[in-house]
Amino acid sequence: MSQDNPVSPYPPVDPSIPSYAPADPMAQAAPVAPAAPAGMPPASQPFPGATASSYGYAAPYPVTPTSQPYNGLAVAGMILGIISMVFCWTSIFFGVWVGIVGAILSGLGLRNSEKEGGRTMAIVGLVLSILAIVIGIIILIAGVGFFSSQPTY
View (tube, rainbow, N blue to C red):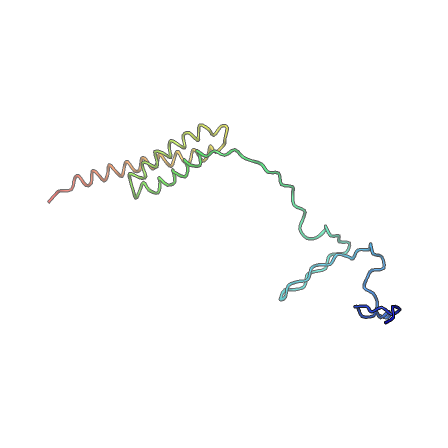
């Protein structure tokens, strides 16, 4: 075997076929709109003079994380106030006791709201809790009065 004619794993290149490499390797192609998915109308071409940043989505604003003060007592009081409003109609004793705990937690959350925030949640929890306590006591008194006035046979 002679070394003058090495065997190449690639087929020979035909010089009559044009090369697809750009004449200037640093030259960039004009921006092209992405192809539309099947069944969709074709994407419009960018307007004359368009650059990569002049169409599409704008650059997002920088996000600066801010931590707001968190008042757990106000949140817990509001949640218990909502629960007590639900249960003051169905389970009088449970609704009243949850309302009492919700009122206490909302009051403590209202006291801490100056430094931790959450004043609105504490007020809502306090109002709902007190309203549930009052409604529960009225239903309890009305129920006792109703059942004690029934004649026994």
